[in-house]
Amino acid sequence: MSVKDFLEDVIDCNVENEKEWIEGYCSVVGDILNHPKYELLRGFNHHKIISCHFHSVYVSFLTYKISTLLGCDVIEATRAAALHDFYLYDWHITKHDEFHAWYHPKMAVINSQVYFEQLSKKQTDMILSHMWPLHLMPPKSREGMILTMVDKYCTSMDMFRQSKRFLPVYHEIDKEVKKHGNIK
Ligand SMILES: [Fe+2]
Ligand SMILES: [Fe+2]
Image 1 (cartoon, rainbow, N blue to C red):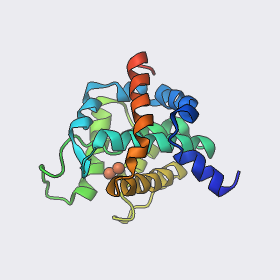
Image 2: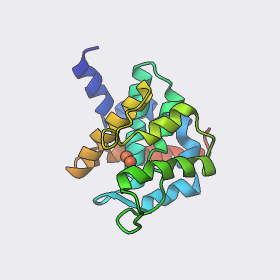
Image 3: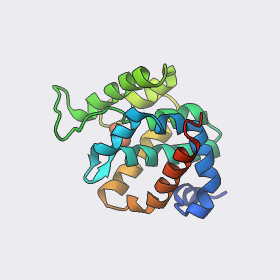
Image 4: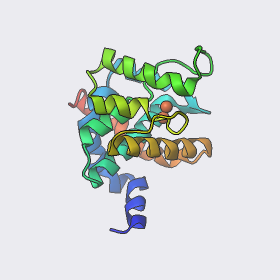
């Protein structure tokens, strides 16, 4: 597969083509997406009018596809990606002593461990380093590098109002999660 085909496959947002990807993705993170605390992310603006929920699903869905296609640790990567911005506050309103870009990954790690699971060392590093190169801590794993690149891609799509192309897949994921309840 050429790089062009690979990238086109990853960013494809045609629901019909994505059915198997959506089912597989939901089987990995359905319990997270169905959790009442995760639902709160719908109420936090993340990038302009894009909610933290939409952004997190977008990032983790693409991370799921890339880590599958590259033979990475799919479950660890996708679950860490779903939780990478699980900081649970509106950063436009709630301010901290530390710059948001550096502070929120730490809160995401703490909240993930409180509400979901003990994160592995790799997952903790993935979440803490996802803002690289805004700080000097590059990801230590392939999965972490995938997450930080996908996060940049999805953030650009959010900023340039292009992420609506993911909306049909996002709605389909919502339906799939609600249909099966706590999938995992
Ligand atoms: Fe983030
Ligand atoms: Fe993010």
